Image (cartoon, rainbow, N blue to C red; front, side, top):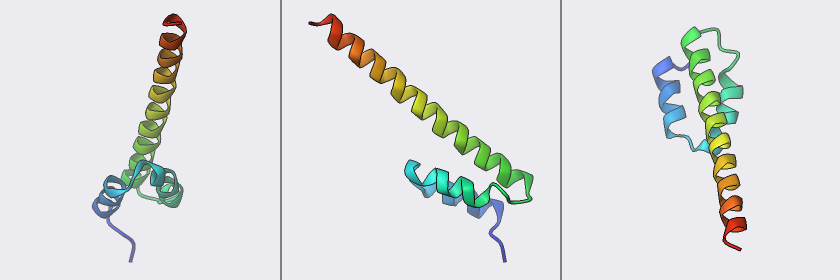
Length: 68
């Protein structure tokens, strides 16, 4: 028996960021729209975190450069 969408959502919520990609790959072929929407949401969330880290790194380098 497959997991309910609620169970899958809890699985994502309890997983660490490093596990999101594996969970997305596991569930992206699920036929249920709710599950596909959930994987899309976590992929978007993951991309936003990557972009924020890149933005912070640029700011950090800029700060270091101006303080020299």
